[in-house]
Image 1 (cartoon, rainbow, N blue to C red):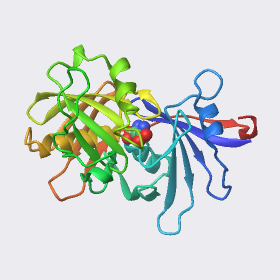
Image 2 (image 1 turned 90 degrees about the vertical axis):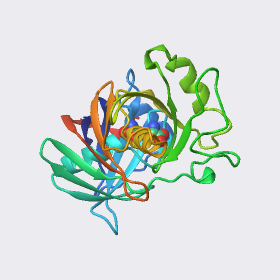
Image 3 (image 1 turned 135 degrees about the vertical axis):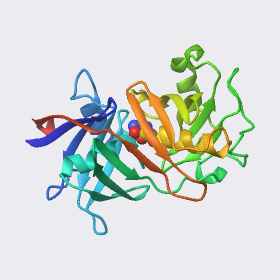
Image 4 (image 1 turned 180 degrees about the vertical axis):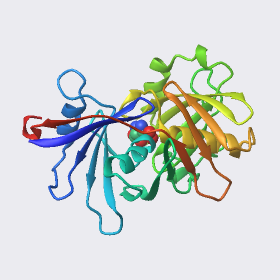
Length: 266
Ligand SMILES: N[C@@H](CCC[C@H](N)C(=O)O)C(=O)O
């Protein structure tokens, strides 16, 4: 039997497994089975905490469709809560620093990348105002914050058909690694409303890396100066960034319950 914790960041939920001292061989099929909300435990992302040579812990991230990915902002905020102290975390996207603060967790999410091949895109293109469109959505920005994001700034978020446009854009051949799709509306000074269609997970209650990518895109487009409050369906995140610098993400993390499961059944 293996132990796990159910956790979430603003309703973006995780099964978190402690594999320190007992490495777990995770396959795409097994991750998908654990994440299944009907036949498994159910989550948006499966998180495996392991040992690291150059950090306090390592973090592996699997989307609900079983794909292993580089970054997850909301899960990163859960790690210090899971471990019980401030931690450095080795991820596929780099080394992250997560600190417990009053009422939540603050994470240095590293430096965003904007080169077309770092997103990655299939061919060269300006990533601040992309020369690409899908139906009546305005030209998006593309940002890599460890994982790939495309950001649309729309006038009326409530009129967007997320269920149709999200998967269409996620799987567009312009994005060879697929993409997380952010639909954003400027809601006031340094305030954005955001809905995210996540690569490999679909619509979620919140996406931490999506909030980072969207705030960075808004600042690059001089729509605001920041710090930026990003309001997602699950609640608010505070994103701080100045051009050339690291992104700081601050928000809540929640432990729901601990459980046990027989991983060989999945
Ligand atoms: N929920 C996450 C992002 C998880 C990974 C993403 N779906 C991807 O495929 O890159 C977050 O809070 O950042």
